[in-house]
Length: 151
Image (cartoon, rainbow, N blue to C red):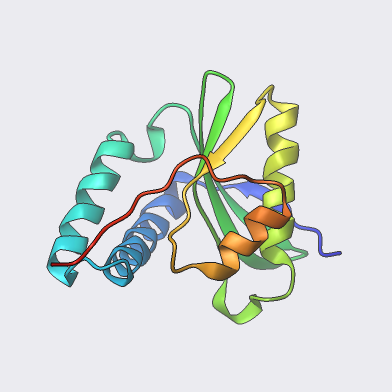
């Protein structure tokens, strides 16, 4: 089994991470059927709403995940009233399919337990079948479903 260590992101690391993360979210929205322009606008609005104070937005936690000295991914969680919501988890492209996603999720669970969190939620895009399978293997269950139809 692969183990990782979560290290809190610094404020200096935040802005480059945010730019990259927002671009990735834009790609996911496009893959879900939005036009590139609509996706970019929606991603920008979402990040403004979720992180109005940027790195200093209360209750948000940002980490990089490491295997030894090698950065293998990142994690963003918000905690509200004993519930964590994973806004994003990612594994670096060159080390995917090696167990790091599972290891980051398990490290997130450990952090949550250590901090009195009793429930974890997340959103996964329907097209991300690998992530969906991982979350189901880790015991996550579907709590809702959003559907759309192109006209």
